Image (cartoon, rainbow, N blue to C red):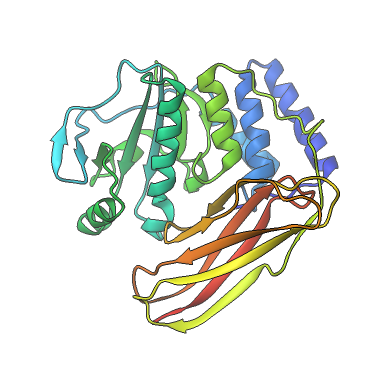
Length: 314
């Protein structure tokens, strides 16, 4: 989801956070607030986000002493990552569309990205509070997700920590002492992912837009109705992004609101006057009316752009 702010509001936010920094807040948390505000939250006021940072910055996450980890809900394994320099921990509750929240393929890609950095020193802890354990395990098997998970049927993890209700703020980057370095979901927001990677690599976080090459781009359409169709039939549509500026156009990242929606897009830049075609695939998990969101991040002035597909899977 996106939070759109005008420049005066952003300036006031920066002044407020600067005051908080003088009170001892960590610089990386200042950065994550700006990222979340500009790129990942909708209907969140600046004061609400600052309040979340105040609450969670440097806070030690408590883990249930009886956490049991399994692979796809079957084989119990010994796993916790106590010796890791960093932990990325995510809590997923039983509210709403489970598949939308999971984004398992994106998590698999992110885990591989972390591994490519070197990094045995980063562990991933997935805590799920399932409303339907068997359905959740079927999704793990369907998506070949073979990383350790904790099926927390008593919701013990949340009861210890009282996580925010918004899933945007239910994922954390922790240090070796389990203290929060950053908050935000890296598979839902590429800017949060960028921040996590910078912290893990030891880079100085810097998100100034000065020097970025911008161009102008337009989509042929921003919404598509798929109408009625058999829910067992995979649906495919395309969106075309045209470079109408005078600089190369690059799609930096694409995120979807649900794991049932996937997008293939060109990684190469499009020169002035050329097109980039995004191929969208929707695969229903059940009979339902749906309205899914696709967020496209690129080097256009209008980025990020939200696209939607809707229809009746019968």
